[in-house]
Length: 570
Image 1 (cartoon, helix red, strand yellow):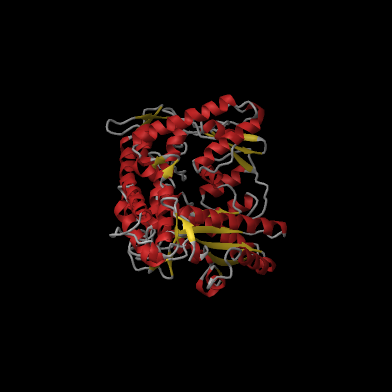
Image 2 (image 1 turned 120 degrees about the vertical axis):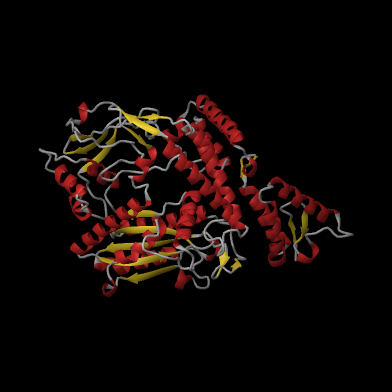
């Protein structure tokens, strides 16, 4: 055994476990007393987590040794910091003041730096010190000067940091699957407040008609039932497209290396080789792996399409299920490439070749690939048609925990690959009246109104690869400097569909928010709820719009045909 620096005190100590006890005993030297005092100060900095941190540290001392346990403890403390602030003790008022300070500092940087390259470098350095990794573009330069952007960012990092540390100390496990119970309770309170805000906030249009935000929410894809139906309908259309074109399909399950899992084996014991990765970091790893594989396949001329579903293991570590389609002669190369990239990190570890990535070919005797995917769609949206999850727990519990997990760590659960823009499909479903004189757009409108996603795919150029799409969506209520949808008391509603050099306006009634007596303002809700704000963003089905534009199609919807030059300014 040699000597190493202590992560708690910075002093050089022996790496022998026998010479570094955790508790104070008579006769211990000054170094050990300093370590004990440093641990106590660390626990005191996080009163919300002190008991759990202390208990977990004692377990790690016995299983991993004091030095490794102290190292992990310091990393937990470091994860709970935003700059020099301890996020576990930040109040809403402190977050508001802190956001204002950061916005003001960024304004000074922008004002002082006249050179564009120097400005980007200065902002990048400043954000990096706060663990914010984003590409510095014109949109971000404007956003970082706003305190509202910083409030959302701090709330998000606070929520994620607390959940990550709780997972790290073993509070997300088989008993409390996917997310710890404290984060789950916080999520439940947020949902209650959000629903209250939706039900108590009233909107009124120019004709005097009033509706609550809850009515818009319930009739949009924010509603789990509508979301599930749309996801399955889209996948059915894709599967029909694949069969029509003679493409072959198969299923893929992709997991991360064992060092990224908090629990080992079936989740019965803590993983001694855990590297500290939180679910967000694992998701970023999987996305990078996927992007590299897609880039390699693109260079080989292999195109594919399908659906990716991200869901958690019991300890919150994400893994992916995918349904992929490609040309039959490309199946072997596609599988080989995905397998190579999946084993790129720690590919020689025990069980990696067997469990890291698995492929299952379609068995037509058991139904199409849609049957395989519907299970993952249902259990991650509303649990329709299911009673319990794979651990024997009620499906309602799984759905709630998985939803809380995805929102806490900002993990996108569903992503279609190689698909035309879904927002155009939703916009077309709002247009009830035929579009005479528009031979390209009218068949698309009819297919969307009929719910025929297969026909929509064909008319939009199909699936996979780089396709030329005949229709583009052009929202008018957009800030072209930041890319954000403009908001306020009065909503700007016009959305244009560009097709054949003609802009078609999706015309709707204009709604104004009338704040109810007991409903807090959106600004107050943002300070209460953090990054997501008071409401979940949703889009529309055929009968009503979601909260992206907060509009309702009128019976006398008007379409104005204009050339791009005649389009009104946003």
